[in-house]
Image 1: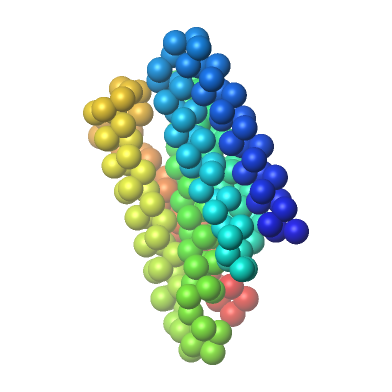
Image 2: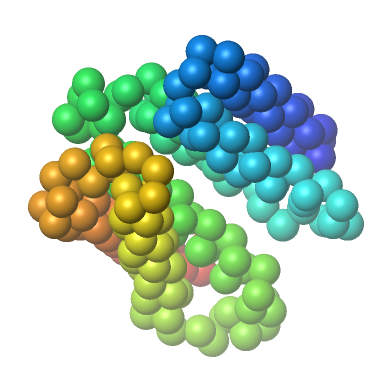
Length: 188
């Protein structure tokens, strides 16, 4: 079932991004076709999981990934939500913090054998989840910085203030899940 949904979602998103790529290429809008091209590549990556015997991520993680890509590439950049709605950027960064922290819990379950997990401190899972979320926020800000230097000039419109808000939102999302993981550790 997971495999079918992964193929279906991946195919729909890749086709959608291909249509956008062609549309904006013909229209002569390089900043938008470049985003669509990036969307094609990023939406294709999870499809590689079908070659694994067991897909390590649960359905909410897979759907959450495609939701994030849709909100950032299509709505955010192509649909200009980043420019139209001041709250959009912060919301996306908060969601990313939550999402990456949840993926961190999944990675923890995959990488740490169950018998070892029983003796693992509540703090370890919380720190791991929060650290992964903060790392993702930092890497995203590096991506925005490099993107502004090379292609666009709209990713960091607010400069340092925008970067700090983004990092704080990503941190807040990760902290929320880290606290959840701390108190729910036996069930995480």
